[in-house]
Image 1 (tube, rainbow over the protein chains, first blue to last red):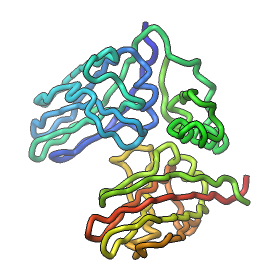
Image 2: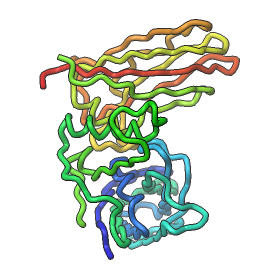
Image 3: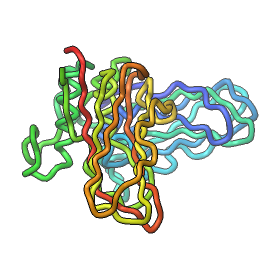
Length: 183
Length: 126
């Protein structure tokens, strides 16, 4: 079943090597689905660049060291019209199962290349692992969640607010209220 | 008054690559105008080691849209063989965007390394 759907990127990429990334707040949600479908709609193209999308993963929500699926959307030449590109990833991948966080990176290559890139992600699976807490992007709520996330990586004796073995989940809009997604 | 006080990174650094505080602190640190930053750097090795700390701001919590907000600690010399206390602050004089992201980096030669801890203290009105 479909678990969530979200537009994670709406960006004009300009120049050889220009890249776009979703807000890192999406990281935990993307890693929660059994499978992901990525859809890119690209228009307003100049100078016929290529577009490549990589699925990145890591233990942190900002520094991604692993190319979990590279590429999830192979390098594709862009024409002057609208181009629709798709890619898929299964969390059951034996070689590269999803780490704690996942994100995407879209890159255009080609001298003088420009493109308007929009990207959607649809997550599918039996269910999200935890019930979604109501989110409020307030300082107390963000501080509480940040403390819990910091505790996740600590040894049991150094934990302060999270019980040993417990994990936490946050919806993307906890960190940035303008992030919207549908269940 | 003090609204939060957190150890945001506790890291053993063994090279001169740029390192980041976890991104889940970005929105918290970006909430307040006045943030005190204390870095305690010990177990320092290397030749003429230095410590750089800078803060990027981002309107949407993305890396491509992040730009420098402040560099409160610019290549501060570290003393080998003792604990180094480094003090910095973000103030309302330079208001930031939504998220504030802290980066740090060791400099010097001779394979610098150090144990780095950074605390952030947010002050303001609740």
